[in-house]
Length: 204
Ligand code: URA
Ligand code: SF4
Image (cartoon, rainbow, N blue to C red; front, side, top):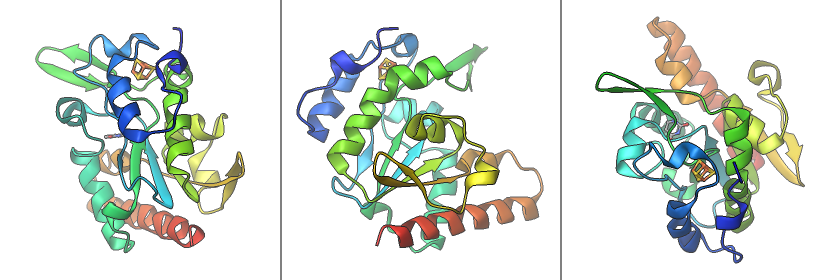
């Protein structure tokens, strides 16, 4: 895995990056995926949200958080009083990693090698958008942004620092989808909402 660096354009222009990422061969994940999914949203957002990797729907549509996890995220953003148009949303890894089971494509977590390989894209996005606060949705995003293993439960709700920037970690929206009990689900959404609100306050 050579890593993405050689495919990242020199100048920090989001549109150019969004084009160039389709040619990235920084790791093997491009082979099975439909397309790379780059970040979307306000190019000068104060709040940047980082997920794990595109899911099945995102891989087909080419946009981040447009599937079931995206619905959870949209619900929490709305409850937190944050307009999705005002934020920039991206993923730690830009290609969908999955396993084929019959006709279904089952999500597989990216490993540390994929996170490391793809990190130049995330770094370039952070540099271009220059947000006040980066919100990590789940452990993969936190690992990518902070460069270390993060226990979400222990570190959510407090502002962290990375490269002179404020970082807030919270759960991944798809963690909500895995809960069976509806009360547990609404508690998880409330927790995600509170963390997003906290991040938005820190971005002021
Ligand atoms: N999960 C993610 O982490 N990102 C997406 O874009 C969709 C689902
Ligand atoms: Fe490049 Fe990232 Fe896709 Fe790997 S996952 S090919 S590093 S864009």
